[in-house]
Length: 73
Image (cartoon, rainbow, N blue to C red; front, top):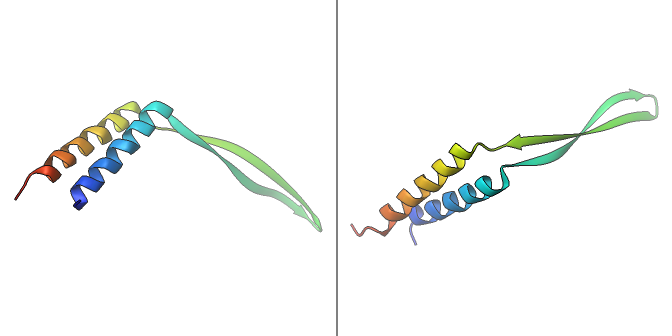
């Protein structure tokens, strides 16, 4: 299996994951105040949205790479 096939499969899987989930979220810990031995920590939940056009583009590019990878030189 050559690099074009592997990259194509990875792009298709990533595009499908982005298309069906729509994004992901994560929790970020921050220290807001430190007064002597006392620390005040805050957990912020942030989310990242993945546009559908980007997911579809990744799937299309992955398909092109798969077709190119199956051609014999």
